[in-house]
Image (tube, rainbow over all chains, first blue to last red; front, side):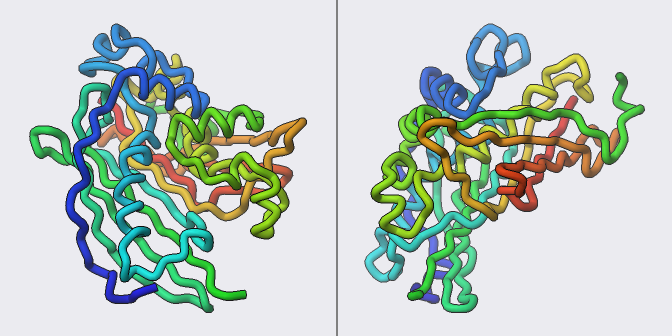
Length: 146
Length: 144
């Protein structure tokens, strides 16, 4: 992996419009039973504009930013050797249906450890008003030659 | 139970969950992660895996739901509870048998509590086949 990737920021990806049915679909897929994720009335009663996305929903939006990194011609990342090491989501507020999220990826660090490489990438997501919603941080481990 | 009787170490939620191949297909569609190691045994074994594995992000996503449920339950620490931060390390893969699936056990325990500031850290222990599959699985929650 190219160590010069550290510190690089990629252009923001096209805004992602969070749909109500996508929130429900993702909630079902992650075994959620929370009425806040399925029922707009329950969500509104709790003070939210629409159904509330489960805590890991931001991965759906983060995905396209990670793809930018994997596709970077000078990154030298072999996708078939990539293993997901760590994941974190840090929220300013929950994601709700109707949000238009713009994600921007920055490579926080690149490290080598015993033949493996590790890249930590932060995707900062802001809403249509430009306010921070969530930062999704992934560490990908690229296995070296056996 | 009121918030001031809560204490570090208290288990706030426990759940047993079976992931099946159906769960994996459903998660692939919902998340957009169509890596074939999550639905094709031949591809999984060709890269040295024991067989089809659960998406790490599926395990992460399902493991936090007992905490989300707790925040809405009668035993909740306060109203308006939500997950402000959630992190895990993927330490061990979860092979999902085509017939019986994979049974995960989730235990959520209070790791840190600040009643004044109305927030807490919940530590998750997620186990498959007698071993933990997530490391440093921490959920930060806040309430009003």
